[in-house]
Image (cartoon, rainbow, N blue to C red; front, side):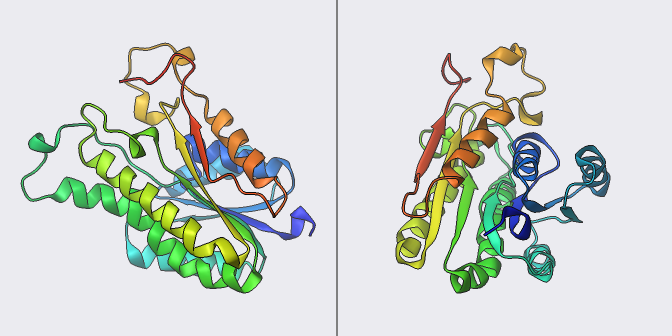
Length: 237
């Protein structure tokens, strides 16, 4: 099927890894639907991408109603879904013992990092199953594999997202749908703006996007189940 007739869904597409993914898939002719909380950031993204078939909707995917609204927006475009990339995420550093006693930080990070992917996936999965093809990516983290100092509830949420991805992979093997967990280490995005380290110490967002696209481009009978990417000099702690 011609790429120009198909749609790639990328959440959190206005910055960082999401923006690099949007540019990569638009660059090879796919239509892209993306969302972010900031309408201004989405307008700037559209301006930067020019005349490419980019469809945007301001959305807060930590809210179940917004997940349903964005899914309706995507399905209303009437294009086959080539891929869905669950990229929305948030990072708040700190130790569990220092987090609010009411558990609000864990609930907030689960809503953004896990439930956004779960709710949107549940809304789009019937269409993907009806197609019998498509590729689901989750942008996890090396924090999904091992605990880091000051990882706190962020680490819990990323472990949970990784578990969600492994469950999806197992359940969808016979459906024709591919599922890939992407686990990048420290990537040069807004989360690391305050770090006193040179840019060369981080992964480029474009490298993550290229790895995702390479896995996507394989033949349908092959799937890359996990992509682990770290800075050349190792983890940034």
